[in-house]
Length: 196
Image (cartoon, rainbow, N blue to C red; front, side, top):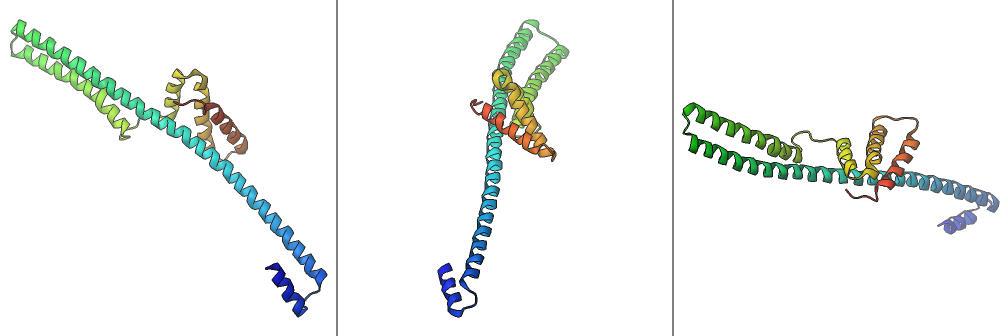
């Protein structure tokens, strides 16, 4: 294209060759400058995208852990419900069989059976189920990181610190943005060796 433009310009003698070479050199310098700026912008976006995907990976692992945590709580609640239900049913049935109680005591036994089992169903089965489906507020990511830290002491403070730095980065446009971002990247590199 430049050669065609050069032939057209020489043919019509709009400019002499030296002037044309100077303009062409200036255009090449400007294009190189734009390419450098564009590559610099892309590299900055790449670092931000890389950091964001790494943080998203950590947050996704925390969400998976939270779901497993509530499934575990639901399983414990189900086992507790079955155990207490069977035990209290056998206890109340045995007391009724051997005691031959009047109506008031039988009502108290029935009411206590319903209250105890209802409490277990509500607190150990329904609440974890609501938190599992996020219909009720569950544990925060900081609390989840502390629970994970109790099992993996090597990353306990690092994971909590990463989440706090990420919150600080999103909440305020501080002057030390680059320092916080570098600290986040360092924490991510230290944490990525663990799978929780």
